[in-house]
Length: 246
Ligand code: GLN
Image (cartoon, rainbow, N blue to C red; front, side):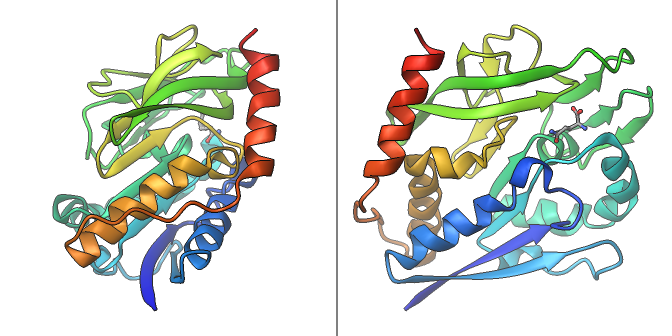
């Protein structure tokens, strides 16, 4: 049985709107393909492990306070995380986790939190704490050359700019900024997005995209996960499309 190793960063702090559910979805969809998911976690004070030995590094969303609290510890991991990124580890980042991997996040108190600077984008929130992007959101992404509508829920004050390669185009909702045309950031080994849900529970093909990338990298051969019964997920998606895209 193959094993995929996932590093879950700050699971006790970056877990807004059940983002840890994304790990459960990856675990389930791996198990359905006879792949074991081995989950490790990093919390404040842990050694800056050799992150390149992980196949996936995952960060969920978090409120401004939690982002402030963990920022110093995250910066200690900068070199190890940058090394993993350069070696091809897959990065999945949701909302607050997305923001912290860019140049900086300026929170709703005007406090500037330095990011890891892996990517060129940067984020600033309005000091008007009432000004937030909140609601259901649908974006059109492209996964391995195929268009795929991704559904989620957004709740962020941060407005992310200078995004050179977005995750998708906005069909309903806000996106990287208020009334933005684009959402998130994507590379073949990176999905960074504002979509909570948890994201992967509503978007099975996105989870399989991640599994395919990781297994192809591990085995050195093109891996395509065998289809599994996603009838319920697809029924839910169609209902949401009818409601959100009419
Ligand atoms: N605290 C950040 C913001 O308000 C991220 C929020 C989140 O992770 N949902 O933009």
